Structures are given as structure tokens and as C-alpha cells.
Image (tube, rainbow, N blue to C red; front, side, top):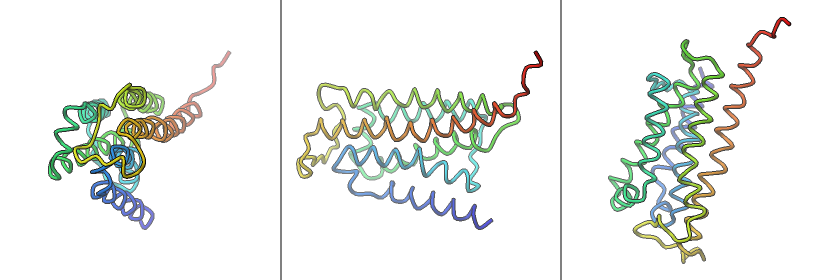
Length: 196
């Protein structure tokens, strides 16, 4: 019980850091780091600690991918970033959707085996990679914070966006692929060998 409480406390602390960070208001890459903390660290820790927002695994997958892609659409992102309340709504909905997704993946469901869960994680990773790839390879800055001050950190808005895209692409994939690999290995271990 103490371990579960510690996981929830760690997840909640990281979510708090991500939700309240002021750096995310002036650097796009810091804002993407907030997203990364929420989806790849805080949400899985909350779920492993016992927070259960489980809906059916396909519904959790759909919700997470849809919410993630919506908030990475430049117009939606720009709208949310203009006011603290809408930005909090953006980050909160990303955390809730990620927690619903990880609940379906990590807490199990008798209708899905570990192989199916691994596939859900991999497909979610590939689809949520798309905004990061676009940000990294775009020829101009398409995602700029309304109060952007990348120059204060020696960066152009494009460089700031590229760092944000790289953060969303590589570290997030390490977590997603790590969990998918664990689930796949556990599934392989549970599969009976072929008799011939």
C-alpha cells in the first residue's frame, strides 16, 4: 500500500510540475516537455499507483489519440495557449485522456491479452509521433507560444519548435516502446510453444 501511495504521490507531483510550470508559457519546447511529463510519466505512475480511469481499452486508446492530436493541431494549441485557464484545460484533458489510456493498458482487461495491449501502445506511439515529426522537420515555426521568448534562451522560434518536436518524438517513444516491449515479452512468455 505504501508503494502505491508513493507512485500516486510521484505521479501527482509530476503532474503538478507540468501543470504549473511558467516556463511552458514562453518556450514551446518547455510546453512540449509538460506534455511529455503528463503522458509518459505522470499518467503511468498514477495508474500504477491505483488511479483507475478505465473505460474500454479501445475507447481509452481512441480518446487519448484524439485528444493528443487535437491539442497538437496549431490552431487549437494557439487558442489554448492564450489564457491560463484554457491552457490548464488543455493540459488537464491530456492528463485525463492519458490516464484513461494507460488504465486500459496497464490495469488489464480480460478481453485483451498482453499482445493486444502491446499493439495498442505501439499504434498510439506511432500516431502521437506525427506532430513531433512535423514540428521537427517543418521549414518554419508553426507552433509558437503567444508570449514566446526563445531569443532569451539563445534560440529562434524554429529551433525551439524543433527541440519540442524532438522531445515529443524520442523520449516519449522510449517510454511507449519500453512498455510495449514488456507487454509483448510477457505475452510471448504466456503463449504455449507449437507442438510440432
